[in-house]
Image 1 (cartoon, helix red, strand yellow):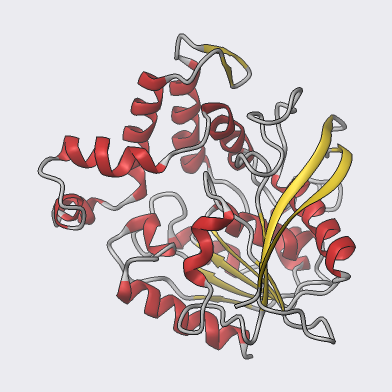
Image 2 (image 1 turned 180 degrees about the horizontal axis):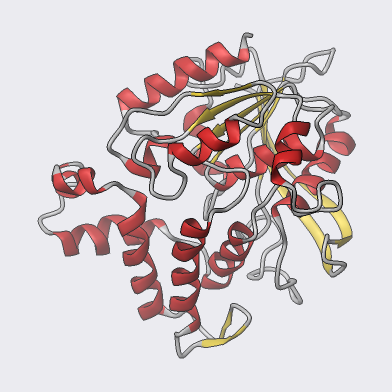
Length: 334
Protein backbone atom coordinates (compact mmCIF):
# COMPACT_ATOMS: atom_id res chain seq x y z
CA UNK A 1 0.00 0.00 0.00
CA UNK A 2 1.38 3.37 -1.02
CA UNK A 3 1.75 5.54 2.07
CA UNK A 4 3.19 9.02 2.57
CA UNK A 5 3.32 11.56 5.38
CA UNK A 6 4.11 15.24 5.31
CA UNK A 7 3.74 18.62 6.95
CA UNK A 8 1.79 21.38 5.23
CA UNK A 9 2.82 24.85 6.39
CA UNK A 10 0.17 27.55 6.16
CA UNK A 11 2.16 30.46 7.59
CA UNK A 12 0.46 32.74 10.09
CA UNK A 13 -3.16 31.64 9.76
CA UNK A 14 -5.97 34.12 10.38
CA UNK A 15 -8.81 32.33 12.13
CA UNK A 16 -12.55 32.95 12.05
CA UNK A 17 -12.17 34.93 15.26
CA UNK A 18 -9.63 37.26 13.65
CA UNK A 19 -6.88 35.89 15.87
CA UNK A 20 -3.69 34.42 14.42
CA UNK A 21 -2.45 30.86 14.67
CA UNK A 22 1.27 31.51 14.22
CA UNK A 23 3.27 29.38 11.79
CA UNK A 24 0.30 27.04 11.40
CA UNK A 25 0.93 23.54 10.14
CA UNK A 26 -1.02 20.39 9.38
CA UNK A 27 0.67 17.03 9.65
CA UNK A 28 -0.96 14.68 7.16
CA UNK A 29 -0.84 11.11 5.91
CA UNK A 30 -2.04 9.61 2.65
CA UNK A 31 -2.81 6.05 1.58
CA UNK A 32 -3.22 4.74 -1.96
CA UNK A 33 -2.57 6.63 -5.19
CA UNK A 34 -4.23 9.72 -6.59
CA UNK A 35 -5.92 8.86 -9.89
CA UNK A 36 -4.95 10.80 -13.04
CA UNK A 37 -8.39 12.43 -13.00
CA UNK A 38 -8.04 13.25 -9.26
CA UNK A 39 -11.50 11.81 -8.70
CA UNK A 40 -10.80 9.14 -6.07
CA UNK A 41 -10.05 11.32 -3.05
CA UNK A 42 -11.45 10.59 0.40
CA UNK A 43 -10.69 13.07 3.18
CA UNK A 44 -10.63 11.41 6.62
CA UNK A 45 -10.08 13.94 9.44
CA UNK A 46 -9.00 12.75 12.88
CA UNK A 47 -11.24 12.67 15.95
CA UNK A 48 -10.83 13.86 19.55
CA UNK A 49 -7.43 12.99 20.96
CA UNK A 50 -6.59 10.90 17.89
CA UNK A 51 -3.69 11.00 15.44
CA UNK A 52 -3.52 9.53 11.97
CA UNK A 53 -1.76 6.39 13.20
CA UNK A 54 -4.88 5.48 15.17
CA UNK A 55 -7.12 5.55 12.10
CA UNK A 56 -5.24 3.11 9.91
CA UNK A 57 -7.58 0.26 10.85
CA UNK A 58 -10.15 1.70 8.40
CA UNK A 59 -7.79 1.44 5.40
CA UNK A 60 -7.12 -1.87 3.69
CA UNK A 61 -8.44 -4.30 1.11
CA UNK A 62 -10.76 -5.87 3.70
CA UNK A 63 -11.64 -2.68 5.58
CA UNK A 64 -13.66 0.46 4.84
CA UNK A 65 -11.39 2.02 2.22
CA UNK A 66 -9.49 -0.11 -0.25
CA UNK A 67 -6.29 1.82 -1.09
CA UNK A 68 -6.22 0.12 -4.48
CA UNK A 69 -9.38 2.08 -5.30
CA UNK A 70 -9.23 5.22 -3.13
CA UNK A 71 -6.69 7.91 -2.29
CA UNK A 72 -7.27 8.59 1.39
CA UNK A 73 -5.88 11.78 2.93
CA UNK A 74 -5.86 12.05 6.72
CA UNK A 75 -5.27 15.61 7.99
CA UNK A 76 -4.45 15.70 11.68
CA UNK A 77 -6.77 18.11 13.44
CA UNK A 78 -5.30 21.18 15.11
CA UNK A 79 -4.66 20.48 18.79
CA UNK A 80 -3.81 16.78 18.41
CA UNK A 81 -0.11 17.15 19.17
CA UNK A 82 1.07 16.62 15.58
CA UNK A 83 -0.52 19.54 13.78
CA UNK A 84 -0.32 22.97 15.45
CA UNK A 85 -1.28 22.52 19.10
CA UNK A 86 -0.77 24.21 22.46
CA UNK A 87 1.94 21.65 23.22
CA UNK A 88 4.04 22.72 20.23
CA UNK A 89 2.91 26.29 19.48
CA UNK A 90 3.45 29.38 21.61
CA UNK A 91 0.52 31.77 21.64
CA UNK A 92 -1.92 29.11 20.46
CA UNK A 93 -5.30 30.90 20.32
CA UNK A 94 -8.02 30.29 22.89
CA UNK A 95 -10.29 28.78 20.24
CA UNK A 96 -9.56 27.16 16.91
CA UNK A 97 -12.90 26.16 15.42
CA UNK A 98 -13.91 23.19 13.34
CA UNK A 99 -14.38 25.58 10.42
CA UNK A 100 -10.80 26.83 10.91
CA UNK A 101 -9.66 23.23 10.58
CA UNK A 102 -11.69 22.54 7.47
CA UNK A 103 -10.71 25.72 5.63
CA UNK A 104 -7.06 24.87 6.31
CA UNK A 105 -7.63 21.30 5.13
CA UNK A 106 -9.09 22.60 1.86
CA UNK A 107 -5.85 24.51 1.32
CA UNK A 108 -3.89 21.33 2.02
CA UNK A 109 -5.84 19.41 -0.61
CA UNK A 110 -5.55 22.18 -3.20
CA UNK A 111 -1.93 23.22 -2.65
CA UNK A 112 -0.32 19.82 -1.99
CA UNK A 113 -2.40 17.53 -4.18
CA UNK A 114 -4.09 19.88 -6.68
CA UNK A 115 -7.50 18.63 -5.54
CA UNK A 116 -10.58 20.87 -5.41
CA UNK A 117 -13.28 18.20 -5.57
CA UNK A 118 -13.48 15.16 -3.29
CA UNK A 119 -15.37 11.91 -3.73
CA UNK A 120 -16.14 11.77 -0.03
CA UNK A 121 -15.35 13.14 3.38
CA UNK A 122 -15.54 10.51 6.10
CA UNK A 123 -15.32 11.19 9.79
CA UNK A 124 -15.95 9.72 13.22
CA UNK A 125 -16.94 11.84 16.22
CA UNK A 126 -15.08 15.19 15.94
CA UNK A 127 -13.93 13.92 12.56
CA UNK A 128 -17.60 13.58 11.64
CA UNK A 129 -18.18 17.17 12.69
CA UNK A 130 -15.36 18.15 10.33
CA UNK A 131 -16.94 16.09 7.54
CA UNK A 132 -20.23 17.91 8.10
CA UNK A 133 -18.38 21.25 7.94
CA UNK A 134 -16.72 20.23 4.67
CA UNK A 135 -20.15 19.54 3.15
CA UNK A 136 -21.62 22.84 4.43
CA UNK A 137 -18.68 25.16 3.79
CA UNK A 138 -17.84 23.75 0.36
CA UNK A 139 -21.10 22.28 -0.97
CA UNK A 140 -19.85 22.34 -4.56
CA UNK A 141 -16.71 20.37 -3.71
CA UNK A 142 -18.04 17.36 -1.78
CA UNK A 143 -19.87 14.51 -3.51
CA UNK A 144 -20.50 12.41 -0.39
CA UNK A 145 -20.25 12.92 3.35
CA UNK A 146 -20.23 10.01 5.79
CA UNK A 147 -21.02 11.11 9.34
CA UNK A 148 -20.21 8.42 11.91
CA UNK A 149 -21.24 9.23 15.48
CA UNK A 150 -21.20 12.98 14.89
CA UNK A 151 -23.45 16.00 14.49
CA UNK A 152 -23.85 19.26 12.62
CA UNK A 153 -23.99 21.22 15.88
CA UNK A 154 -22.77 20.19 19.33
CA UNK A 155 -25.92 19.73 21.39
CA UNK A 156 -26.45 21.22 24.87
CA UNK A 157 -26.35 17.72 26.40
CA UNK A 158 -23.03 17.06 24.70
CA UNK A 159 -21.78 20.45 25.91
CA UNK A 160 -22.60 19.44 29.50
CA UNK A 161 -20.21 16.52 29.12
CA UNK A 162 -17.50 18.71 27.60
CA UNK A 163 -17.95 21.41 30.24
CA UNK A 164 -17.44 18.82 32.97
CA UNK A 165 -14.16 17.73 31.40
CA UNK A 166 -12.94 21.32 31.03
CA UNK A 167 -13.90 22.13 34.62
CA UNK A 168 -11.99 19.09 35.85
CA UNK A 169 -8.81 20.23 34.11
CA UNK A 170 -9.34 23.83 35.23
CA UNK A 171 -9.60 22.69 38.87
CA UNK A 172 -6.09 21.21 38.80
CA UNK A 173 -3.53 23.11 40.88
CA UNK A 174 -1.25 23.00 37.82
CA UNK A 175 -3.75 24.96 35.72
CA UNK A 176 -2.41 28.39 34.78
CA UNK A 177 -5.56 29.58 33.03
CA UNK A 178 -6.87 29.28 29.46
CA UNK A 179 -6.09 25.58 29.34
CA UNK A 180 -2.36 25.90 30.00
CA UNK A 181 -0.55 24.00 32.75
CA UNK A 182 2.69 24.32 34.72
CA UNK A 183 3.05 20.52 34.62
CA UNK A 184 0.88 17.60 33.58
CA UNK A 185 -2.07 17.51 36.05
CA UNK A 186 -1.97 13.81 36.86
CA UNK A 187 -4.80 13.73 39.41
CA UNK A 188 -7.04 15.84 37.18
CA UNK A 189 -6.24 13.64 34.18
CA UNK A 190 -7.32 10.58 36.17
CA UNK A 191 -10.61 12.28 37.05
CA UNK A 192 -10.97 13.39 33.41
CA UNK A 193 -10.67 9.84 32.06
CA UNK A 194 -13.09 8.49 34.66
CA UNK A 195 -15.75 11.03 33.68
CA UNK A 196 -15.14 10.17 30.03
CA UNK A 197 -15.65 6.45 30.68
CA UNK A 198 -19.20 7.08 31.85
CA UNK A 199 -20.11 8.57 28.47
CA UNK A 200 -18.09 6.61 25.92
CA UNK A 201 -19.82 3.25 26.34
CA UNK A 202 -23.47 2.59 27.06
CA UNK A 203 -25.20 1.54 30.24
CA UNK A 204 -25.98 -1.79 28.57
CA UNK A 205 -22.25 -2.28 27.90
CA UNK A 206 -21.40 -1.98 31.57
CA UNK A 207 -24.45 -4.04 32.57
CA UNK A 208 -23.18 -6.85 30.34
CA UNK A 209 -19.82 -6.72 32.12
CA UNK A 210 -17.90 -5.88 28.96
CA UNK A 211 -15.60 -3.57 30.91
CA UNK A 212 -14.22 -6.79 32.40
CA UNK A 213 -14.74 -9.49 29.79
CA UNK A 214 -13.50 -7.42 26.82
CA UNK A 215 -10.35 -6.24 28.58
CA UNK A 216 -9.41 -8.94 31.07
CA UNK A 217 -9.64 -6.44 33.93
CA UNK A 218 -10.41 -7.93 37.34
CA UNK A 219 -12.38 -4.93 38.61
CA UNK A 220 -13.95 -1.66 37.53
CA UNK A 221 -11.03 0.29 39.00
CA UNK A 222 -8.54 -1.83 37.07
CA UNK A 223 -10.48 -1.25 33.86
CA UNK A 224 -10.56 2.51 34.43
CA UNK A 225 -6.91 2.93 35.44
CA UNK A 226 -5.11 0.32 33.34
CA UNK A 227 -7.25 -0.17 30.25
CA UNK A 228 -9.22 3.04 29.72
CA UNK A 229 -7.15 5.89 31.13
CA UNK A 230 -3.92 5.22 29.17
CA UNK A 231 -5.81 5.82 25.92
CA UNK A 232 -5.69 9.58 26.55
CA UNK A 233 -2.05 10.24 25.76
CA UNK A 234 -2.12 13.86 24.57
CA UNK A 235 -0.83 16.69 26.73
CA UNK A 236 -3.53 18.19 28.95
CA UNK A 237 -3.26 21.49 27.09
CA UNK A 238 -4.05 19.72 23.82
CA UNK A 239 -6.96 17.80 25.34
CA UNK A 240 -8.35 21.10 26.63
CA UNK A 241 -7.93 22.91 23.29
CA UNK A 242 -9.79 20.19 21.41
CA UNK A 243 -12.58 20.28 23.99
CA UNK A 244 -13.00 23.97 23.18
CA UNK A 245 -13.20 23.14 19.46
CA UNK A 246 -15.75 20.39 20.05
CA UNK A 247 -17.88 22.55 22.37
CA UNK A 248 -18.16 25.27 19.70
CA UNK A 249 -18.89 22.88 16.83
CA UNK A 250 -21.64 24.27 14.57
CA UNK A 251 -21.79 24.18 10.76
CA UNK A 252 -23.91 27.35 10.77
CA UNK A 253 -21.71 29.48 13.08
CA UNK A 254 -20.10 31.49 10.28
CA UNK A 255 -20.76 34.35 7.92
CA UNK A 256 -22.31 32.01 5.33
CA UNK A 257 -25.25 30.91 7.47
CA UNK A 258 -25.44 33.27 10.45
CA UNK A 259 -26.36 30.59 13.03
CA UNK A 260 -29.21 29.28 10.86
CA UNK A 261 -28.69 25.52 11.14
CA UNK A 262 -31.59 24.64 8.87
CA UNK A 263 -30.17 26.87 6.13
CA UNK A 264 -26.73 25.30 6.52
CA UNK A 265 -28.12 21.76 6.32
CA UNK A 266 -30.31 22.67 3.34
CA UNK A 267 -27.31 24.09 1.48
CA UNK A 268 -25.45 20.76 1.55
CA UNK A 269 -25.37 19.19 -1.92
CA UNK A 270 -23.52 16.02 -0.93
CA UNK A 271 -25.18 12.67 -0.43
CA UNK A 272 -24.99 12.37 3.36
CA UNK A 273 -24.89 9.04 5.17
CA UNK A 274 -25.62 9.50 8.87
CA UNK A 275 -24.40 6.59 11.00
CA UNK A 276 -24.95 7.23 14.69
CA UNK A 277 -24.42 4.50 17.24
CA UNK A 278 -27.74 3.22 18.55
CA UNK A 279 -26.53 3.67 22.14
CA UNK A 280 -24.22 6.68 21.67
CA UNK A 281 -24.61 9.15 24.55
CA UNK A 282 -22.80 12.04 22.79
CA UNK A 283 -24.52 11.91 19.42
CA UNK A 284 -27.79 9.95 19.75
CA UNK A 285 -29.65 8.84 16.62
CA UNK A 286 -32.47 11.28 17.41
CA UNK A 287 -30.17 14.24 16.78
CA UNK A 288 -29.17 12.93 13.36
CA UNK A 289 -32.82 12.19 12.55
CA UNK A 290 -33.67 15.86 13.09
CA UNK A 291 -30.76 16.90 10.84
CA UNK A 292 -31.76 14.44 8.12
CA UNK A 293 -35.12 16.18 7.72
CA UNK A 294 -33.31 19.28 6.41
CA UNK A 295 -30.83 17.50 4.13
CA UNK A 296 -31.47 17.23 0.39
CA UNK A 297 -29.90 13.78 0.20
CA UNK A 298 -29.63 12.30 3.67
CA UNK A 299 -29.99 8.71 4.85
CA UNK A 300 -30.01 7.61 8.50
CA UNK A 301 -28.44 4.22 9.21
CA UNK A 302 -27.74 3.66 12.93
CA UNK A 303 -25.07 1.18 13.98
CA UNK A 304 -26.66 -1.63 16.02
CA UNK A 305 -24.43 -2.01 19.07
CA UNK A 306 -24.25 -1.64 22.84
CA UNK A 307 -20.72 -0.25 22.55
CA UNK A 308 -22.03 3.31 22.68
CA UNK A 309 -19.84 5.92 20.99
CA UNK A 310 -17.04 3.40 20.53
CA UNK A 311 -19.17 1.50 18.00
CA UNK A 312 -18.20 4.15 15.46
CA UNK A 313 -14.49 3.27 15.65
CA UNK A 314 -14.71 -0.53 15.75
CA UNK A 315 -11.10 -1.48 15.06
CA UNK A 316 -11.45 -4.59 17.25
CA UNK A 317 -15.22 -5.16 17.04
CA UNK A 318 -15.92 -7.60 14.18
CA UNK A 319 -19.72 -7.17 13.96
CA UNK A 320 -19.68 -3.37 14.12
CA UNK A 321 -16.78 -3.18 11.68
CA UNK A 322 -18.56 -5.45 9.20
CA UNK A 323 -21.71 -3.30 9.44
CA UNK A 324 -19.76 -0.10 8.93
CA UNK A 325 -17.71 -1.58 6.07
CA UNK A 326 -20.78 -2.75 4.16
CA UNK A 327 -22.61 0.56 4.56
CA UNK A 328 -19.60 2.73 3.68
CA UNK A 329 -18.58 0.68 0.64
CA UNK A 330 -22.12 0.71 -0.71
CA UNK A 331 -22.35 4.50 -0.20
CA UNK A 332 -19.08 5.11 -2.00
CA UNK A 333 -20.19 3.20 -5.08
CA UNK A 334 -23.45 5.09 -5.56
